[in-house]
Length: 387
Image (cartoon, rainbow, N blue to C red; front, side, top):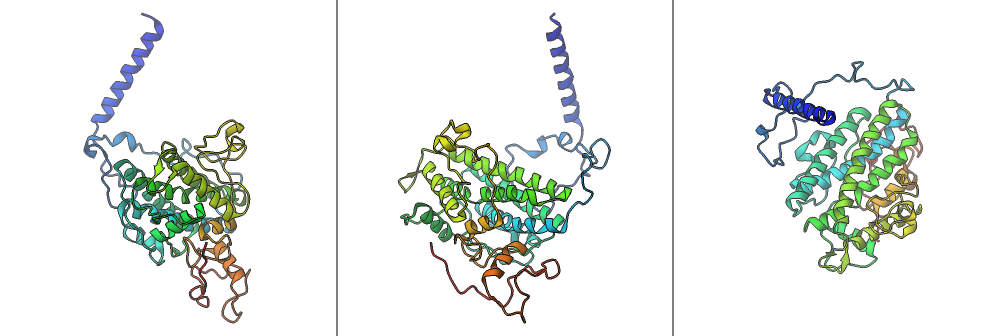
């Protein structure tokens, strides 16, 4: 027998024997679920009791020499100035969590993990979307991932109060009207079906990963860098799945409108570029060759710059996009009363006057005078921005 074939058969036999031995071992019931507060959701195609748990529950110790990472160049896990960028990112994470939770399960963070909201108001008019089975499973997984992101960030960098978040059909209709620079008839409803929902989902995760990319040079703590790398990896994967889902349907006409999926993505990307006002950092599914990979393609499954790496955006750009006002000082859009955290509130402080006897002047030390809520002097913002 040929020696290569002999060794191939020998290794295959050993592998099969190992798998059968592991599968026959009883599961370790002492190991608890990662997030016991989250209710179970039936996404398994077969009875979970038929899946051997042991291969997925191999114990390890991060601190052991075998598993420990390389020593960091700095001994500081989190610098004080690392915290505000993550507090800012929590605004996007809250938005994604509420959007995906309501769309997939019809409930929000207050029902899944109310302690993470820290008393923030519930979102405006979130609804369960009419999703097909595959899309339902995708969005449900996204939803629970975002809950975990919030818990992870709050545990390391401290919490902020969940801002008031608008995810109503009326807001999404306004976004699409702004994207096409005309009123769509009937108004766009993202909760209507899977295609509408995934088109709407195209809007937020990409903004989040742009923000993480932009924040990277400003972080110094080794734990901060590890947190950002892990978060941006999952946010990028979510965006890629959404774009891939839509790319398969790029030439499909979005009923009842006479526009294709590709035209929706192109117009949404152009809207975000217009609002951010810092050039092209956003691309739809079909682009001119000059914007394609190596300037050779018109298809654009992944949005990336000339070097095929992620575009970066500053907090100011992200606020302009999420407020829909094109101005980081003027709230609206997803955050009718403004985003929370030191960075977002700093821009509101610069725009809205307030007497020194009630609150410090803009630019005061946020470490010494932290706050999570809008200052009470502001009350409700007296203006409404229209596209």
